[in-house]
Image (tube, rainbow over all chains, first blue to last red; front, side):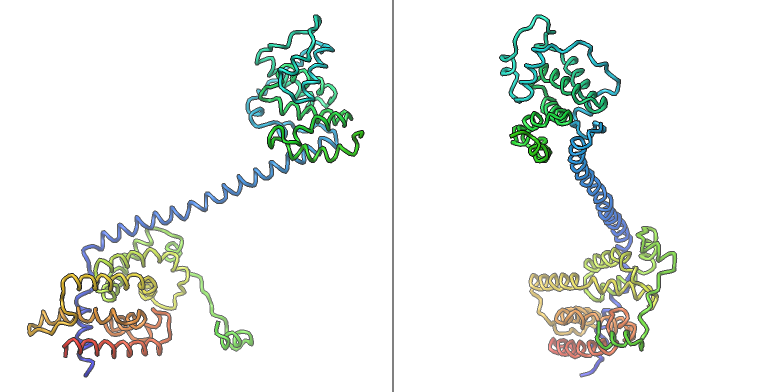
Length: 238
Length: 200
């Protein structure tokens, strides 16, 4: 028994494979192609992860900012930029051109019936039955969409840019009378409640916030309403 | 880390290993994932890596796959390259690290072919020298399939490729005495299997 046999066998293998291959070029092509794919796969998370992180961060910050905004509205009474509280669809649809506040006085009966509708949060049919016809009031039963839109913007402007919460309450009432079941009515009711709180009518504000805290509008403004009710209740009369 | 080595490091008797940055701009480009640098290193070293892969696996198709995988892993592996060995040895070392899966696959394929063709495991060497050499090579690969991966790699590097044990040790990343011991064990086992197969 000697190493000769192994040497011969090793020599056979050494001679059989010298490293030359007709497939070398094809392997090179495959290698470069696979390498490019690997690099693309590695780059994807490098791009996607920061984007997702930024998105999540902005969403989280948006929620915190909304809550802060609600608290600041109550405590400071300072007008704050309205985009924080406006729903996104409102902000997107609102034109930037200024709109004049309608100069017509708000009729007593119309305003009071609108107040009932707005405070109760009940649908339009119910508020329509409460409303009494008044010859001096301007008909609001069938306002055009552009009028409703104008009312909303006017009320919004009065609350967040005008710095006059009592005027804002009246304007919100007018809007809610015109469109008690409009797509923006939950936001209008919430803003009205905030305006009430800022005018010092905390009991009314608390009543207006209750449907939100109860979840009558789903999760919309529920957390904020609960927070605000916690602040308003001690001040509200029993 | 070895406690002895660690204690010497703490007491200052041994200097910590110097990790030298790769200064060669070509290697920097390779480490950064430059396709041209990869192409260049492939063209420079593919023949050595392919020869090693074929000699280790005994299967040219599997060897091509192994070559591709080795070079694909090179850009990330080269970040550990400190210039202590030649780049050629380093590249083959990367191929060694990719070998386990390919060795198993090649051995499995060889067994399947053997069962299909119903050839005897160790055919008797025929008088014709050329045919006898071919049979001896095939028998060696079948015998290699019975070794551990470590013994197989050590045998191919030291005996088939005739590398000195210190170079094989650098490629494998094991001490030279360990590599020599693996080669001796492999030789003994292979000799027995070949002689059982009727080769003298």
